[in-house]
Structure formats: structure tokens, C-alpha cells
Image (tube, rainbow, N blue to C red; front, side):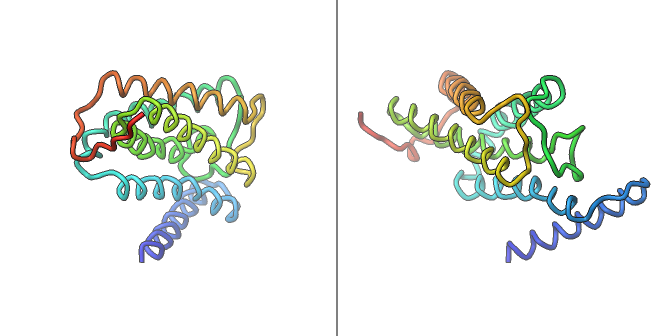
Length: 195
């Protein structure tokens, strides 16, 4: 049922975008416009994952971190890397992009960082936190690798090793900030791992 609703919404959005593009005098390749829906789908999947894995009250508590640590940081990195440093570029950005940066890709980091924060704060062992942050950062690199393989992202003056290093540094900095400021957590939900 959810799949049918998202498919119908995707078709409706595509029709509206194509009509808008044709109205502006642009002719958009239908296949390319369809492929650019991946950014919206990725955002929807990340949001659904957040709703499944994080309790609603914790979503509201961690939302400011998701906005700043997720969306704002992702947008800053994309602006620097795509516009100024030209480290990579994105294909299929006909729908909802700002000068070649898919806005829904940057927005996807909001729910992903809420998930990251919720589970990080639930861990009490320093070792568990260390491995959790590393695993989460490397999972984001795996997503980037998938985008490259399927032709949605192209590295110019960048490679996957640099992406892994950037992801590790960013996630450890965000994790450090989160643990240092420590938003209140419901102690009944704490996962205790003795080390």
C-alpha cells in the first residue's frame, strides 16, 4: 500500500515537473527526469527508516541536531565540493536541484542523522560507540559507492578513499559534539554493553 502511494506520488510529481519544464520552454528527457526521482525516493526511504527506528518523542528531541548536523552540514559540503572545489558532480538533477546539487539528497541527511544520534546516545560503552560511529560512517560511503556505480554521482578530483576519510572525520566530530552536549535520553531505552 505504501509502495503504491509513493509510486502514485512520484508519477504526479514527475508530471508536474515535466509540465513546469515544458512551460519554461525547456525540453526535458523523460528518462533523465524519471531517474532524478531517485533523490526524492532516497529522502522518503530515509524518513520512513527514521519513523520506524526512532520513537516519535525522540525524533522531536533530536530534530535540531538533524537539521544542523544533517541537512546544514550536507548542504555546506555539497556547495563546497560541487560548486567551488569541483570534487564531484551529480547526474540526473532535473528535479529539485540547486545548480547541480540534488536538494533531496541533502535533506536525506536530516532523518539519517536523527537515527545516528538516537542510537549513539543509547550506547553506554565507549568501545561500542567507537565501532558504531565507524560503521555508520562507512555505511554512508557504501551508499556513495552505490551512487557512483549506478551513475548518479561522478568523482572528478575525488575518490572513495577520500570519501571514507571525510565520512569518518565528520561522523566522529558530530558524535563527539552530540556526546559532549548530550540531549536528555529516556534511560529506559538505554542499551547497556559492558566492556
